[in-house]
Length: 140
Image (cartoon, rainbow, N blue to C red):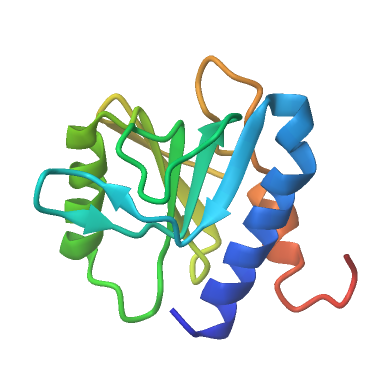
């Protein structure tokens, strides 16, 4: 955290989801505590939830968890975080890499690389090329 591309992609993704909250019946949050097990809390970069009241610490699986890679992230650590979310019951996890301008989607344990990540069975998606095009842009 704290590096420009990571922070900027997080802000742009939060704005994307925020703009679609009413249309998709969701809520988006950044840095939300998620209780993945009895002894472990994770803080993903973004979570997307079905609309409704939410506790301070999520104990039910979010609809979507998004992790944005930082230059100092280690692949095995990222995979462990994803595994924790899967074991909690999260069906869809996205890992976004600002350096390579790619995204990986895990749904039910299967990983796929894509430029347009989706949440299966919903209208929820992101156009990564549009997000990455705005990293250094002053346009909204």
